[in-house]
Amino acid sequence: MTDAFANDPEYELDPIVARLLTSFDARLLETSEGRRSLGAADPLLFALIYLPNSLKDALGRTSLAECHVEWAEVAKLWTVPVQKPKENRHAFLAPRATGKSTWWFLILPIWWAAYGYTKFIAAFASRDAQANNHLDNFKAALKNPENKHLRKDFPNLVNYSRSIEGQYVSRSGFVFTAQGVDSQTLGMKHGDQRPDTLLLDDIEPDESSYSGAQAEKRLRTLQDAVLPLAEMARVVISGTVTMPGSITHQMIKWAKGFRAPDLEWVGLERIQVHHALPILTNEDGTERSFWPGNPVFSMEAMLPIRHTRQFMKNYLNDPMAVDAEYWRPEDFHYETFPCTKTILSIDGAVTTGRKSDFTGMAVVSYRPPGAGSPDLGKCLVKHAVAVKLRGNELREKVLSILEMYPEIGGILVETNQGGDMWLETLHNMPVPIKTLHNSVSKTERAARALNFYQLNPHRVSHVAPLGALEEQMCAFPQVPNDDLVDATGNAILMFLRPPKPQRSGGRVRIPR
Image (tube, helix red, strand yellow):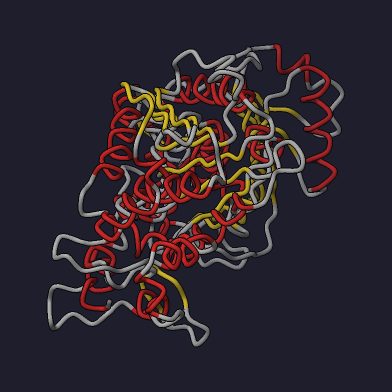
């Protein structure tokens, strides 16, 4: 059987495949009953036996990634009946070209359908054409004469009673429908059946044709139209991050431990996020590829591009771009030192609606020249948070930050939006308030602030990694919200920007 998985005589059999091939008595492969029994409890064995071509690369060689093994383990949950709503919902985020569509729209659905683990799959993609392409690939695999064991052992699945664009109904009664995620889905049924499995693959377009407002709309569709189709249905969401703030990015952030109002939906929908990393660390600190049998993911191929925005976004699902226009991860320095002044800087939003910006708040401290530094002042960013609050709720949030950081001696408020409204909201503060009206562009202010991060020696440090702030900085200016960049930048420029020259007696006098 080994020869069936390698056309190249010099090919070294993939270790995961080799382990599978030695885990059973090969004589079981000689009969339909033996093959069916082998595949019933193990989707990896099922794929090797019934869909071998779906696992081969361009050279005809078979290999599996470590994440494929994890996905197969999760897929085994389909063998157990769902007991309560939202019990079996998963998101699988992995590098591009990892085979997400092959596994979640082809191999695993065929396995589920072959053994009756699912009766009705409703599949969704970003567009109708993309969804129909997935369904066409599913039907093509059933018809493929090279999948001879599948055709012989599961004739009631392979042969259909109805097969039209967007739908496949097998003789066994299994139903597979596919459509764009924005299509009308409410009340989807086939006879008396409702979907018991919902598959969503790449439901967001690429960054060039996507925006923050569109991401919010797509999320509402997911929550209000797709997921309510069947509360008891198993759910799979697979994809790669398309841009900062996208649905997939929000799930990645939730999985990393970020907690913010705009991420809470992931927990409320009980979505378990599985994030596959292309480079894994061994116990001894050395590194390995998660898919060494694929040349695209060999360490030799990945290491030269590891520092690029492409790698971080398309491989790590992390849109904090290292070759961005402004900040890069290496611009952030982490330390702590004594400071003499600390302010709370606020960049506010006028409204708190779905389409409004967040209010950004940053706690920034300052060490002047001579206080532990030979000749330059320096800033320390201690805290950064973005909220969608106004009125008394915003005031209470500000008071809580002042309590967290008692060293704060003043509040700096940018009044480009809201004007004197901020003085009304922040009434009776225990520290003075200073207003700021910026007359230069966001990009110019960002460039000035960035300069202080990159000076040698650098003049801005963070007390610890500040995920939300650093994420905005690395994605700037192509970021849905830049409130934290503004709030932090305003404080840095207030402390570190040289004073403007003053005219005296017809001459320009620069204060010392």
